[in-house]
Image (cartoon, rainbow, N blue to C red):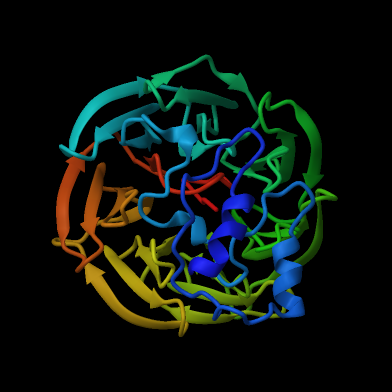
Length: 388
């Protein structure tokens, strides 16, 4: 943001139960000072009732700039938390030394490590263990498991009221109290394998991928129900990670069997078109300046780079000797992309400046949705770290 916006944004940054950053974020794409917002921009800025004010209607990731850590996470040690699917453990890595500093026993088949909306807790999704293991990120200690059915993945509504459990095997979206995890409402889905999601800029709906049936769902956040469904066109699909563009108008959905990302108009929910990236496209991560989308191609050991302002691919990085880059996130300063190596029992630290492999770290068996923590942002929408 530029100076004329600073006072307004500082006033908007405070959250109930979550302190905002001590200074206003810097934006890559700010509107010119003095230019009035359009009706569409005002609508996007309004947001879901109870949701923190959108800092910048042109860039929903404006709070994710390097160094903009919430006061809530001040003092938390920087760590990489790696859930090992077949080992039933979480490996903890110190990113400063690239060394394993702890191994935490958790429940059966941990899929993802997910920051809570208020940034105070990391939840390990023990899918087949039907539980969540809380980790205190200030100490790195694991707490007592909380009984939750089929938690393949976990998200939080932008107003901070509900956790949304992707109950993949049960074909449900379970809305739970964001703190106690008590069930509030189950929304049945007519598709197989609900797994990943992202929320619209105004928080009023979210898009969900169904990996086993090749469907996309549009879900009304406030009403907690599916309002639209479509099957991806042109043959068998296996949609994975979902990410919305900085301006909130374009959605990207990785597809592991179609080897690319689908480009979707979420508001209109019309048929998307496919952008080929690489074999086994899987994870999607937005750079700290909101200009690049990193796409992990698990089936060929590469990372594709999509230029977000233009929507065009502009390069590809290859891991030396191949690999299976899966899920992860960016370091707080944005200089390192951390990804699990799903079928190589390793974690990759990749330089975002040029794509070179900094370090390869052995972990447990089948590492999956690793979490880099802490990261910049005012609150978490879940998964391995979707912050706004």
